[in-house]
Length: 429
Image (cartoon, rainbow, N blue to C red):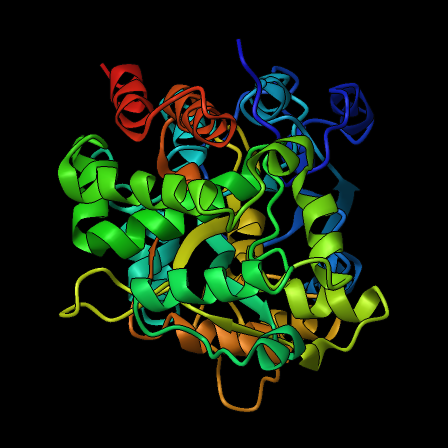
């Protein structure tokens, strides 16, 4: 089986053994380890949490402990191979955490729900009025597959745009484009001035998905892409196919060095872009913060959404669900797990994440008085009028492998746009 590299770090599943030392999920006394049916009552007892290496995790766990002194919190940093089966193995082990943070989206969390490994959260949304807390497009997306049951509370989203080096644009005498023709003209101007127009690194697939996703959005629009993702619409249909043709045009016209891009991974390409080795990059909202950490001036970088090919549609960024909290179907302490879910949807939780290294755009509405990083705020504003899809997040795992292979084929010249899109459609049959 092909494996897909994910945002979470990969750690061997011996971590399940480490959690076993904490007892079964919820710390219950049932010798047979069966999950209790009790879903109401006081939030007490033991709660086992599996988080990531996000900089804010220690702060939010301590905040939860302070507000829930009757709950014994046991927190472990986890990083597991998702599509490789790591999370599934952990949850099936009988010693997995009560709640854990995983990569979001129907194509990922859907694997867990279909296997019966995580608990539905419709009652959590109803009890804590979470539909009033989260952006409507978030809840629409997590209800969009299956029978509409909710299984995740989305922590954050990635918002993808074209980032550009302001000084390089100024030196070249160009402005952020308003149309596709403007974009191509800018690329030509930069190329003729000896500047690499677009820095790309697609060896590890992620960034190639970000790029093609934006081009598909520009070409086909949100409604068509929603049909492709959720209703089985074809990638090889004309409006979607044109997005792949746009990528080929960028490669053919020297806007992207395809050979170099195929040899670089996303981190290497971002480092080169931050270092001024190219004018533009198709990346997510954390770019200015990463530039600052690398010693560059974050104000040297701006962003714009890829212009729409249809003048009746505004240019919009693409977005992908990033991290989500899910609840172990076998948790023996549903009340404590629910208390954690209420906590992660709270304003205090958002404030602590914002103060301690939040790098994704919050999925929930941002209340007045909560300050988040400027680049995150700008990305949140960019998506206010809607956002398209980063297909990598929403396609089922076998199809996303074909999606990535199609991108590699386009960059290396081994596939035509028609062949690339037909290859993705074939994987869905």
